Image 1 (tube, rainbow, N blue to C red):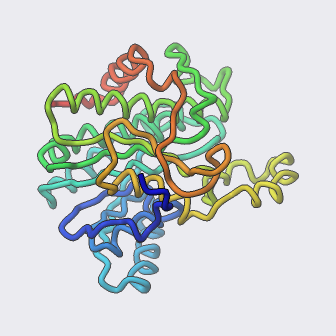
Image 2 (cartoon, rainbow, N blue to C red):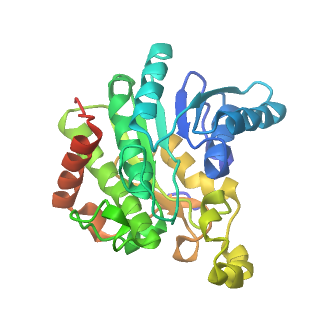
Length: 308
């Protein structure tokens, strides 16, 4: 096997491919949109803030004049928004080669989504679960399509407690725990989706990735905390730039050697930074019982039933 680092130059020609990137107007999502567009894919920049997304698109067009980027509004904290986005996409396209479920929020104060879910779980998992389910028909009819879920090193802190997924009324709520559970859920969802693809004989892959510790706006809710201010100079030395952080998700999306239920992250110490390689998630992420339970709960709460 080649020892060379996998970089942007390894991205194959993507002419004729249609790719959705959620949270595509900033951070690693923006870098992924730009990378895919440079290789001639048609990329949908899905964003809850269309104004910011339009500005981000302009930046990409300035750098890559031939880029095919379409801005579409998507608020993953609203099942109604997810439904409207999915219908609008299906009205316009008859294929979906890559669904890169990248958007997310991190360690936020306690809040509920528009549908009454705990904010981080609702946005990071339920929103993407519902989106994937409502686009499943296009995904499964597109040969060699992929669903990529962006998780986090923080999944290693996660412990699935199905009695407390919602942290009702904010009792016993921990921003850190809620985030880690949502990221562990991303992995449980990925691996269960791959099992279902295989059981149904579908030529699609479900793959996960994480960006390491990258310079994005995910840390905005920590900036006012004293510990963050003390640690910030040290953290900056640990962080990698967003373009490098985007590479694991990009590799999972387009590398022809990727297999279903694999997990990609940086190759550096503790997977904080570096070039994308196959990495391992914790044993709990492979728990079959938890995966099935989470799937059933997710279908019930979102009202989206996957039809394979």
